[in-house]
Length: 350
Ligand SMILES: Nc1ncnc2c1ncn2[C@@H]1O[C@H](COP(=O)(O)OP(=O)(O)O)[C@@H](O)[C@H]1O
Ligand SMILES: [Mg+2]
Image (cartoon, rainbow, N blue to C red; front, side, top):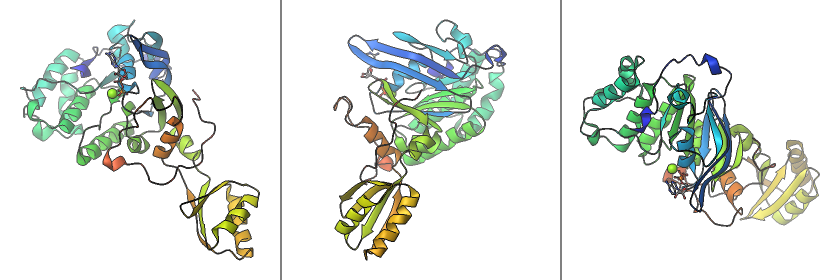
């Protein structure tokens, strides 16, 4: 199975104490004419819950495979805590665990037996951590059942339990909640939050914008193998603030007044609502101006673009429609509201 990449050794990490958990520079992976990953730079800092967000086919799994040393980059380099997973082999994966796509287990053996086999391979006291790992992923009660009878969500959780045997400081997860039912998704997210809360650095890929918004502090948005945005999630969302929706008793006059108001811009009427961008003081001044002009305000509300809206805005237009739109689970359906103002600057700041 792929959770058990490498063999654990000393966990001190003293030799590379200052190096970030992940540092990838200029990562490229080509398959014939297809460039699956096209010059990705990433730095994941200790304690980050880093979301690698993009639609299907964007190159997420391929990127994670390179990070885990499972495939060789066509170009570029990877360092995990300062070590190269290809050159340094198993030592580079000291303190690192994770799996791409699905974890694999012997289906006719119990979860416990599978973990015992992996622990025997991992060594370093891994056997003593089986009980705790099963507890963490809430599979203790089912530990003697054959994995073949497990649901997809249980298998994913068992994959994380297998990773935990290695006592990782860095956990890489490839779409951990994809394909799970709503309860499974909720449990998986709670588990990731719990691990992150214990100080584990996590990098997870996802095509679910809401999931990244819920779990991650940093995000890289990837499309067609390229990172089109990388920053603190909070900064990305902050860049989407400053838009307001205005409803009045006389929209055409209100629109003129808004357009004339210093500090107000991008005034448009849309579906019976006026959209505008403004700083807070200008919004207050506008409300006074509207009142003075005898225009009644029915609503004047700030609007923050959701990550969904930002994602579509960041990916729209570039390179035409080469990609299918991101697949969204029903619970993650994008807001039906109109897209908000384009955040600036848009682009990678790595
Ligand atoms: N082993 C491979 N051989 C050829 N093409 C591949 C291989 N692995 C991935 N690809 C292609 O690379 C692109 C990115 O795939 P992948 O990394 O799986 O995307 P994601 O995980 O974001 O859905 C896709 O077009 C996929 O078909
Ligand atoms: Mg994938």
